[in-house]
Image (tube, rainbow, N blue to C red):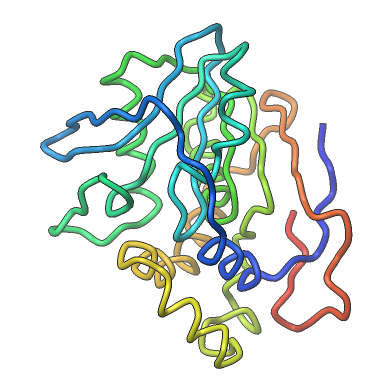
Length: 226
């Protein structure tokens, strides 16, 4: 099943994430993977496992209302990328999509959470999971994108240097260091996604969730995501 995207601004999603408060997930644990600590929540149920990926600047608590509902019937997993929450930052590398996805795969392997997965990604997490599904299609059963970032969303009129000054101020002030490093990589991340083979939607079912209505009036910073 596929639902068409509405047009939605990337910076609006960023501001919403960094300003929003949310409840905490219960049962938080920490696991060491390749000498780095990662914070995660895992409920073991039936498969396939549902894996959550956070948006830019957000932690897994963003899923606090959704996670318990899915966990009633499915194996369910959420974690914080390196540099978020209690997940250790990697001083020897800059956060990017390749590093994040390999960290995630290693963490799932260490915890014996086996593919194929249903991937659920919000905002930048949606772009990361587009990369995952294209690079490792045999590990993915389904893909759910929640107001996902488009691979070209930070190019052209969407580039950071063309954002309104007040948006830059809010984002730069409230986004954690790891998020700012990821923000600098978004355009390159989009190009890496596009360089991979297109998603085979006959084998990997994909669903896109968006706001009910497009922002009105629209702005040059908005782009149709597909």
